[in-house]
Length: 427
RNA sequence: GCGAGCGUAGCCAAGGGGUUAAGGCAGCGGAUUGUGGUUCCGCCAUUCGUGGGUUCAAGUCCCAUCGUUCGCCCCA
Image 1 (cartoon, rainbow, N blue to C red):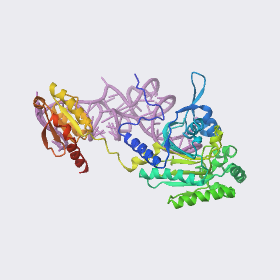
Image 2: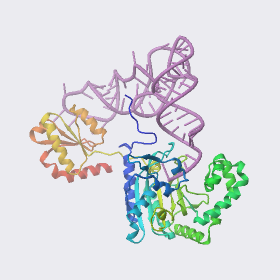
Image 3: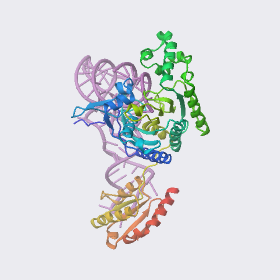
Image 4: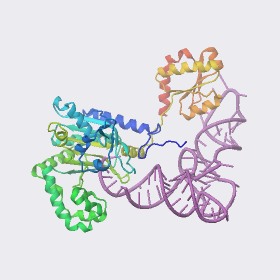
């Protein structure tokens, strides 16, 4: 029998590392909640058409990275490759726009893309995302970005850099696209093959090619910022001013283009140098056309997504996880004592303590070793003598101090124990 | 989809054609059968991802395959 392994590009999150995930999720819930974002949970699979329409047929995500399958009813379904399309679908389906005023939504969960795994990239990965729907005001962009930055700050992440750009509206982009193609065409022969291919399909993407020669050519290329209409340019200036006022550092990078079709105006990425080739921890921007594209009313919107695996990769470099500790480890030997031990454990657990029962029936010495290994603050000991007179021996492992306590008194002494444990942790 | 590197125990590994597969951590047992953290002793891979080939001889060389890592593409 060969053992079955987790699929390529998927990972088990084991108890030893789950602490990071819980910490990130708790912090996200807190920070987003404080900014009045409300959590939404949508299905992890949807009609394929949702993503085809929402993300764009021409994108790589839709073109070659989706987990698409046919169910028993011959419907084409797809495991969600990102979270925005589903959130917007729910927004439209449940007419959340009718509530009046902008809606602030956030989500967190697994996403799926069929890609070759590498550092910071998996086939099933997790994102935390936020969407602010119903405001086209430049302040909405700023609010969205500020929440993302606040979340990363609260997690203690340092030395991140934010790249900011405006890709204008549809008209601006069409103008710019023409300019860019005009500029690049004479260099066609010098471009790398991928970029040659993109010249017709998606010329803006050539700008962030990693090939040195291509980068060199792009140095002199026209900037999209020069192609913005006065209105788009003013809007972008407003976003920058507000970020500066909030003390949020950024650098304008006119070559930042995002991969999904639905972006317009503000685009931003937060990157780290400590992630290998996949440097982006958070990416987002404005997507004014998406809601109507998905059958809702004309609704401007802005949002972002954070890659949780990448985030946790950074956290792990920062701080080791403090292991879960046990307050009491219950050591027992002898039939009567073992029976009583179960009750003692129950009483202590009801008192709010983390209690582990030794189930081995081995020598006391062995049981103490295990108590040590799980980092217990104290051992509760029950042998024949204790069982006989209804007491336990309570031994504090750090000091070695040991005392006899009546089993009936354990509940009443909970507060006293709690103080002793707290004291020990502080030391 | 393309390119490169790597697969020896639960983990980290040495060994790069000559035969008893180092060592460390962890684990288990004992010294110590009612008291842990230290110490000491012992045990822990008939086998080196899998299949085939070369050779008198293969973890060691070759091929294939699977897995994994890193990079490209793309993205969080």
